[in-house]
Image (cartoon, rainbow, N blue to C red; front, side):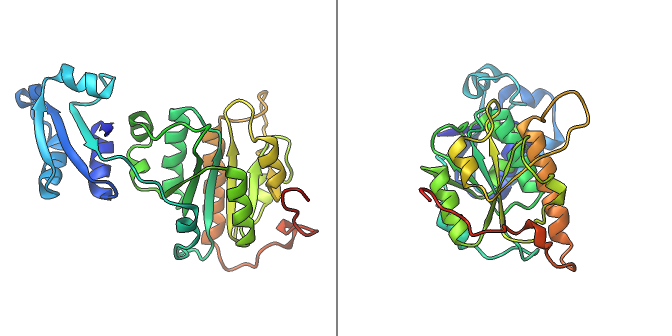
Length: 267
C-alpha cells in the first residue's frame, strides 16, 4: 500500500476520491490537545466511510519514515496510472487548447511534487511520466505537492520519445525547455495544443527527446547563474501558458509555427 502523511495531503486524497483509502491512523496522543483541522479531516473520512484507528506517535513515524506526519497517516491502494490515450481522448478544457506536461528524468521527489502542485494550479490537462528515470509518486511527493498529486491526471509511459511522437501525430506541438533554446518562453504562442517537456535536474533534456521537440524555449536570466531549478522553471512556463490560454481573443501568432514539415524519428 502507498502511504500519505500530513493533514493537507490526506484531506486532498479524501476529497479527490481517485484512490480508495484502506484506513487512516492518527496519533493516540492527539486526544490531549484537540486540533480543529484534524477534527475536520477525520469528519470527512467518516463521511467517506474510511476506517480510522489510533496508534502511538512513534508508530506513525515508522509508517511515514519521518516525524513530520502531523499526527495522521493514510494508507491507500496502489495507484493505477492512466494511459497516454486517456489523456489524448479527454474532452478539451475551458480554454479550448490542450496543454500537457512531460517530465524527462525528474528524479528528485521534491521537484516532482512541486511540479505537480504547479501543474494543478495552472490547469495542466495531463502529465507524462516515464516508467524509468523518474521519482516515484511517494509520500514525499504527495507532501511536497500539498495533495495535488491526488488531483492531477498522470499517464506513465515506457518510452517518453515515442509518446511525444504519438502526440505530434495528434497535432500537439512539442516544446522543450533548454537554456540554449530560442525563442524566449514568453514569445511562444501557447494558444494551440502544446506539450511542455522538462528535463532532468542535472543534464536537462536527453538528446533524443531534444531532437523530437518542435521548439526549444529558454527562460532569459539576468543574474550570474545560467538556469533555474527545474520545478521553478516549469512553474514559470506553465503559468505563462495559462495566461495566454485565458486570452482567446487574439489569433495565434504565426511565428510559433514551424517553417518546414516536422521530421519523425529516423528521418
